[in-house]
Amino acid sequence: MSINKKLLLIIFSLLIFSNLSILKANEEKINLDDEELPAIDPFQGNSSVSSTQNEQASDNSSTGGGLLNGMRLVGTIIARNNKIAILSSPDGSAFKYKKNDEIANGTILIEIFDDYLIVEDESNQSFEVYMNNLIKKMED
Image (cartoon, rainbow, N blue to C red; front, side):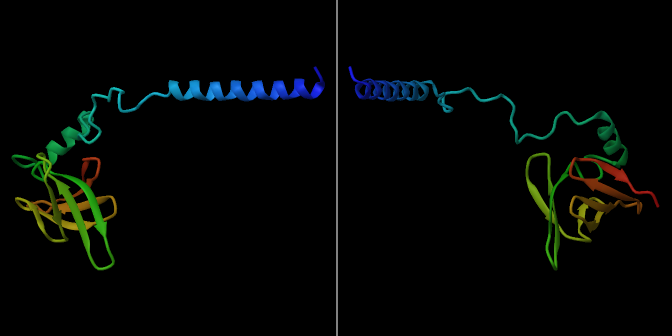
């Protein structure tokens, strides 16, 4: 055999083997629709909140559902002329509040910032409400 024929045979065999390896790789791909999904719901609230935060939130509460009636801050909307706070109740309903709106019995929204709110309870004590469900009493 001449060198040209040998070279042509080698190139042809390389092409065949590379196509076979690509076909085999395609067969080994896993179909994601058939995979089992995790049992954890990513949209469920954080159930592993530390006990200090829960104690702190319960210390701030006067009756029933706490300072915010069991609601938690889930978002804020800051526009040029308007600021809105979005709070979610334990059943999943969302409510919007503006500055000076009453959130719960005697709890009034004082100020809205990017990631927290300032609220005042019926005894004129101010609290910072953060999106991670942390409520801190403000020092005067």
